[in-house]
Length: 200
Image (cartoon, rainbow, N blue to C red; front, side, top):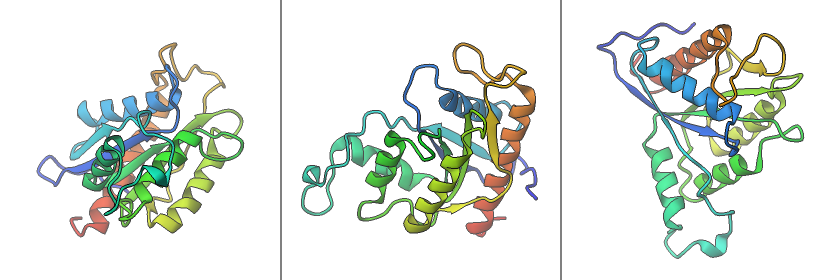
């Protein structure tokens, strides 16, 4: 079970990625809510940075140079992932799987050297009847090969279209129960990160 980390405890840095690029995205809204929780005092010892994946080109090894040199946008993205202690994926479900932009970002960061390797991670999603849950299972399969270590509990599948209203017109999370569940995910990710780093 996750425990609240005190103010004097180490700070973990989390890179947060949204698999949806649309304006008003619920998934980007979930990340904004996570950032608010980390900055508003609800959780101490965690710093969350939203990493925009929209500038990344489609994966094309013709864009790579000798010595594993990548386009500037890719290099900047890979550096952000490398510097993070753990990863938060806000993963929509498209056709029972992850979205193309998110898979593209994952693939770029897995090019040699794989900068995902050894990092703890968590998945959150919002959607229809399953709350985007099927994307979790494909993402976990991908994580096996790239050596990501996902928390198992709690799972976060938010049924976005069932009452009460979960998001406002700007895509901001407004449901308090969902915010509390999101907080529990972040606490679990924090505790797991510290455990893997030997800092718990």
